[in-house]
Each structure stands twice: as C-alpha cells, then as structure tokens.
Length: 440
Image (cartoon, rainbow, N blue to C red):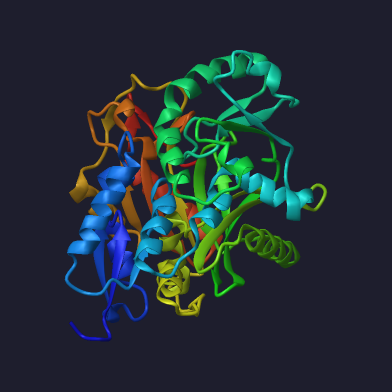
C-alpha cells in the first residue's frame, strides 16, 4: 500500500455514511475500514462493552498495515469506547475523562455551571431506585428526568405533575440497565475524581425545562487546544416539544446570537479538557428576553447533519472528524455546495400507537423513483407495508413517538424547501391504519 494512503477505521460503518465519507476532499488518500458492525454498536438491545472492546482490539491487531485513525459518528457506546481504543494504540483523540465530561449529563452540567452558570437550568441528581425518589427531587414542575447517559431521548420524560413521575419511574427502573451497565464498564477505564466516579450509570438527572424558544446545534472542533465553531443548525421539534422533526442548515438566528453561542461553546469546551475532537453543542435562544441556554454537549459530529452540510457546503462535515483524527487542522466550511439551504426531515407518528399497522408504504423501487423527482433528495424509510409500529428499532422511537423515515432535501429558498417536502410526503403516501402521514 502507498505510503500516502491513510487507513481509517470507522466504528459501526454503514453504507449510507460510507458514501458520505467518500465525498470528503482527499478521499482518494483514505481507505475506510469497518470496526464493529452497526447492528452490534448502534442497534443492539444490550451492549457488552468489554466484549466489544475485545473484538475491536482483535480486528485492529489482525490488520496487516498501519492504523492511522479511529473515528465514529454514533452515540453511546461508540463515543465513549473510541478514547479507550485510541489511547491503547497511541492514536490522536480526546481523553476518556474529557469525553465523559461532555457525554455524562450530570458531570457535564457541573462543568457547565462552573464556567457558564447563566446558561444552565437548575438540575439535581436523582437515584430512581430510592424508595422515596419523589421526595428527593427538589424541583418545581415542569421538569425533565432522564438517565445520566442514554441516546435518542430514550427514557427521557417530561414531568408536569407528581403522577407523571410516578408513571415514568417504573419505565426508567425497568430499562436503565441497558445504558447503566455499559456506562459503568466504561467509567472503570477512566481516571475520575471520587465525586465523579460515584455518579454511576443508574443515576438520572432532573432539570428545569428550557425548551422555550428556538433550538439550534453548534458544530465545532478542537484542534491542538484551539476551539473553532464552523456551523449552526436549526432544530425544530414536534408538537409535544420533545421529539425531533427537522434540522435546517444554515441557521436563521441573528449573527449576534450566534457569536454569543460560539463564545459560550469555547469556554465550556475548554473547561471539559476536550482536545483533538469534533463536538456539537445544543442551545436554545429565547427571543422574549434575548437569552441563550445550553442543553447538552456531544463529543462527536452529528451524523444527521452530515448530509445537509454536504448539500450546502459541497462536502460533508465528516471531513472535520477525519482531519482532527489525522492531525490536520480542518479547512471547513467548504463553500462549494449545490444548494443555499438544506434540511433533514423526520416524519413521526405520535401517541400510544404500538398496535397500529403500516397499511401503505412504497417499496424500495418506488422510493427511488419518487426521490428522483426531487433533485438533491435522499430517502430512507424505516417502515414497510404490513409492519407494526412496535417493530421499529430503538433508534427510531422515543418515549412519545415513532420516526418513520429520514428525508434529506436541499433547495435555494426556504419556501421551496417547504413546498417540496409537502409534495414528497404526498407522493410517498405512507398510511398508518389507513391514515396518511402528513408533513408537520
């Protein structure tokens, strides 16, 4: 193999994201190798972290050439396993401790409160297994309760009254081990303080509601200690205020607000100690009092944003992930895209619909034909005719809804984007118990 070729191992490599990876600049210099399968690292019902680490080590040890980087775009447990594997092989990347201070919701809130107290809601640590859990939550309604680490809003509940908490706790107690056991295994690899280490995976965090206003996600990276933010994506949630329905890039927020978010991101990321890593940070902007609030940090790129960056910038922001892992300062955004605006749409079905059936959905050939009528559109359906909604994987459902598709579209104007999406959904004609799913 040529000395100029870089071998990049991608945790949970899948065909859709491999296509995007091949769209980065200098892709002819990279060979992408799969490290663990998508099904075991992202779609599994349980995660045996030590077994996964052992399997990953065996794959890397058996490779006949030099390993130049290990990267990944999936959430838990990928994001917390990569620092362990990189450190063992002397590869560039953030420390496990710094990633935990981003990804562990309680530890992250402590860091955020120390350096940006005005952006952080009131929060308390909750042991859901305490006999009198309710009495230990000194919070006014409404608030959110969620595990200190999960993904896709799993086991996250909005609490508006005592009855909501009493209804949520049995679900949390029954399901939290799926995340708690692997998180505890990962934390045992970290050099944490006694106060940090005691907040194990079976804890939850309760925090005041901050979802009043406009939500967005700042995408950035840290390279050799310098924090840079290169793009902001608007987030639109569904009627329940919780479920994600759309991402749009670029953000339409005022420039002064964007500057304040970038400054806050720099201060918080520096405090976590994160280095040589991409990150994204979710904010709310509250127009009524011109304030911003910080929701959460992820020590990775958002894979959901990559296709819409590609449509606007001409290059997916996976390039940033690759560059920092190889020790190159990113040159991004690329400013060479086909469209002015792009979005990821996530059409959903809401409510208690486990028994409901998909009575009509196009097959793969029909989906491709429909997409061809909308230039710059990519469609992945998560449902098929005859299936029950309860068959959807955990990655496509949350505590309140079922996501039936991922749809990426680009346009030159916002109005055209809206009109094209409405026409696309009509053409797909997805029906649940005979009722057509309409655009939000």
